[in-house]
Image 1 (cartoon, helix red, strand yellow):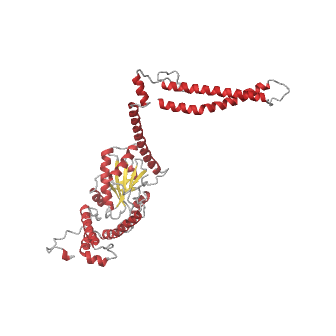
Image 2 (cartoon, one colour):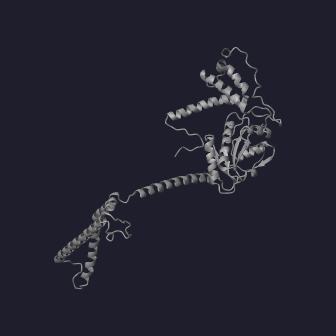
Image 3 (cartoon, helix red, strand yellow):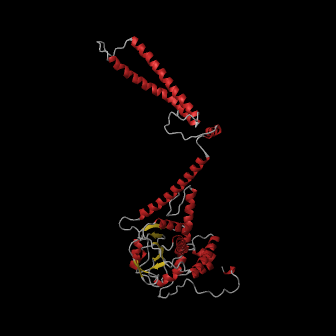
Length: 121
Length: 328
């Protein structure tokens, strides 16, 4: 997607937020609020691009996703930990299927309640 | 006053004569027979002549007429008692003294028109009705909460929760004993959680402040990691600091965490052997567990609750608590 970006050289990249940093006792700290926000932003941009190109699953449709939104995918993977990228991509499919199921049930006249709460009496 | 009276008198008119008549007739039959038997002649006492039958007939007719006349009289007097407001002594079916004290004809007429209703009675009725409705509704809610608390309070051993031995974010030992005295809001998660845990912990922070404002310092928020390999006390401390300073973050040995998760019925899928810096996710249940000051499980609050709703649930349970509660 290089032809969409402006001609100016990209600013120097901040250190990859997904990189684990050691904490005072040697273990690696978890991503903080800022790095999480960066990750979510990159994810949303990538998923929005997939929506535009009607690609649901970027894992099975990897070639199509790379072709359409490769640059954003790179950004996404740079800003999020590998496990998160995997998780969000899988979750996108799960969420879509869930929505479809709920729509189907509601079209058939059923009602879907969130788990844990009883339907109103 | 007039309409109910008329209705009553009408029913009396339709019901009483028949009832009275049949009982009278039965009585007359029983009365006449023994009188016949007193003449102990050779004739059978059951034998009745034609002359006697005619006599009986006229006797019944006369009785019937008498009873009817008496009933009519009763109805008539009842009606007049209903109509004449001042005639209190003739109220046939009431033994209570009349409350009605009417001085003028206008008063009597307005009484007659409005019946037993008045403004004061109406207002009183509405106030009492509204009061009772509100009371019963509150009482119903309270009983529902009590039922949940009682239901989840296991008999003997607690069904959810139990003893644990972990380390807090400052490296000090923290056991289940340290939970006692206050309500505890327990959440299981891990610091490398992509999206659900941070959202839930943000909600937890709002809940903590809401409950604190309403009920005082009676809630101990606890975060227990499901990922002890990566979540050391220092990591947990740094992570939780972003959400709320009150949250106590607990970690520990793999076995201790596993046992705690089992006690709280938390699904737990952390691999036992991971190298530092390894990138993986942990599956875990996402409920807030509310525990009472005696360490017993009260209620699980799911993701579908907003922070405000969850805070309300917690506050109601705290208000229901009658035992010891540490407010320091």
